[in-house]
Length: 120
Image (tube, rainbow, N blue to C red; front, side, top):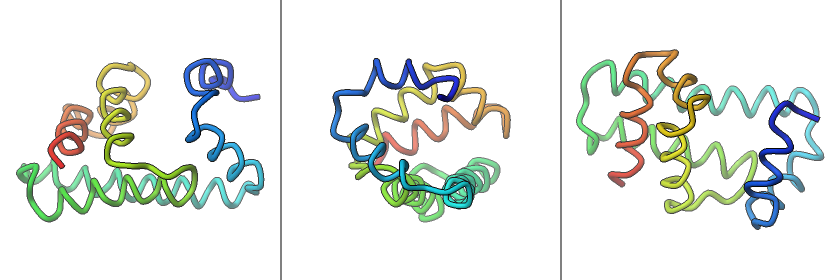
């Protein structure tokens, strides 16, 4: 079991997204998880580019980052609707672990990712 498995189970265990994610990911090999991480990292890099170039939230590059983020989640874990993505975005600024992931790349990135996702 992973470090956060109990927390994840408590917060989302009864949701369809959790069940779908468990169903999909239970079949994944180590290589599959690595490929999922590559897709997620690619989306993050799109956000880094947009943020680093001070692109507006409604720019094509920023919108592409938002879509890549949602597509990676849908491809590897569960059907990520716009509303679900917006809920995730709130965690990116409220949960210190997520905030650190983004702000560890570039200070202020977590807020930009949040705002870009909320702006769609």
